[in-house]
Image 1: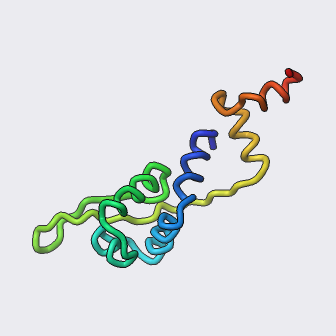
Image 2: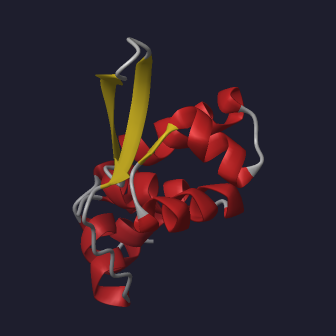
Length: 111
């Protein structure tokens, strides 16, 4: 995982509402209005959180038509396994020039 990918994933799960969304979607896929009612949050706020989770590859959304012709946006979890350890963080930092900064200088014997 690159440094940028690591930051996106950590940022995505680093909010209580987004963790609640993941927990709810772990039960079953849901359409947006249903999920908003379940979590007692507004749809615009829910969409903002879902966008972050989708960007991180944690959820995926699909548009489907109901029997009465309404467009429903369903979201479901994407199977994921994120492990955070020192070796993974070091690999992400070393592989990403924008994150290296002082670490690169110190590890290369710089100032």
